[in-house]
Amino acid sequence: MTDPDLERWRLVLGEPAAAAGELGAEAARRDAALDWLYGRDGELDQRDVRRRAGGSGPSPLTTVDWLNDINQLFPKETVERLQRDAIERYEITDIVTDPEVLRTVEPNPALLRAVLQTKHLMNPEVLRLARRIVEAVVRDLMARMATEVRSAFTGTRARRPSRWKQARDFDVRRTLRANLGHYRPDEQRLYIETPHFFSRSRKHVDQWQVILLVDQSGSMVDSVIHSAVTAACLWGLPGVRTHLVAFDTTVVDLTQDVDDPVELLMKVQLGGGTDIGLAVRYGAGLIEQPRRAIVAVISDFYEGGSEGALVRAVRDLVEQGTKVLCLAALDEEANPVYDRSMGQRLADVGAAVGAMTPGRLAEFVAEQVTR
Picture (spheres, rainbow, N blue to C red):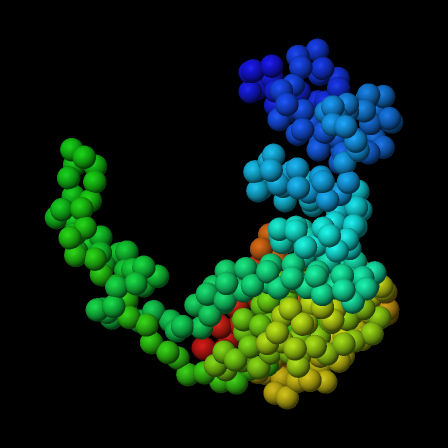
């Protein structure tokens, strides 16, 4: 089989497409790796689909062999997808609990989520190896998010010229007006000879408290990760005092570890029930100046405690002048999945309900702090 398209379809369809021709040696290894994972899908029997027939390797693959093979045979994006499916779809937890695997696996967000969900099963040696994954992924997130978060606090653009030429301060309107004489109709292009830029001025900064209350139930793992990193990025910024509180049916104040998101995440215990009202009341007790406080409740809002008590707690915060954000997601995708009935009840008493990326939350905080 030499046609790349036929080979791709053969790998997608497995044994049912065997009539398309024999696979080459490398493609057969890919087929074996895919069969090791997707061949265990019980839905194949339910749909009366013959299970995939993998390559002609001499013995079944182990998890370590499979990880080595997919890293050799597939591009990085595909490897991450395969690892994510192995962990989240088929619950192959030895990817993050086997010491031999942990010594060689390439860290990525899917593995970080798996470590946080399974670290309670790990002995100290495995936990030490797993920490490498947490540190690597958090370091990458910090590098990407810190600039975005801090840029929200660099001041507002003033309507006066600046000699400093930075892309973020580019004055589009003034530049267009000043260079209209260089427009060439025959090319339909405007040539810029003199670009113009805004200057930035700092506004007065008042001290604000930002209190992040994070639901640590298993469905909120992405938001837990991004909340920890966001809190670390906000830590030490002028005008902001950050608190981070994790909750299920109890409340754990993690503020002392906010400047170390790796240590913080290693202390989070995912799973269990949910008492959001308890967390909101705890957050209310941290507030020193109600009109200088932002409380962000990050949860799917499926309340295991008293729904009425939760609504009353949020209403009390709003009535005292505190800004309350009820975020169904705080991550890079910001795709909310939550109890919309409860979300509406919280919105009705004055909370802002929705989802945000960490960068948008930082912008919201900066707008309040620097106004």
